[in-house]
Image (cartoon, rainbow, N blue to C red; front, side, top):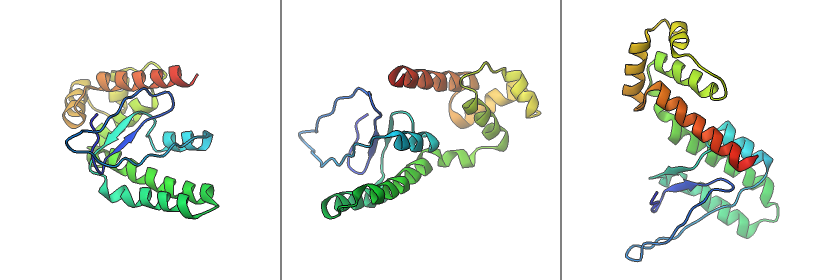
Length: 169
């Protein structure tokens, strides 16, 4: 990723990355180190438990500014910062998943089934039967709306889950 101004780059513990400024167009970087079981659970609850790059997040900048101001002026940083950070996560979640709301109901239902089944063996024919749709129709519709077949989507989710298990266990 090549994050620029007004973008958010989310890395989790044990993520490997390198960064450097563009000498011809430098910009200021604001970052927070968030730690603790509660924060990990919040990331997971909001579906932000992988590495993400969110461009054009100027509308979320006030949360960063508020956190910086809080760090410089307050003694009770932790409880207030947790509330601000929670609102920031909510805003990032909306950016990441706003396209889900525009999906046809059958595609959205299949996506939810795949999202909840990364640790078990799934059968596409059975999932499609529950939706009263043919497998061929669902594969075409899923790929049209999400850019991947249900199988490719599920494999990517399993890879992410495996990567998290390797990093955190």
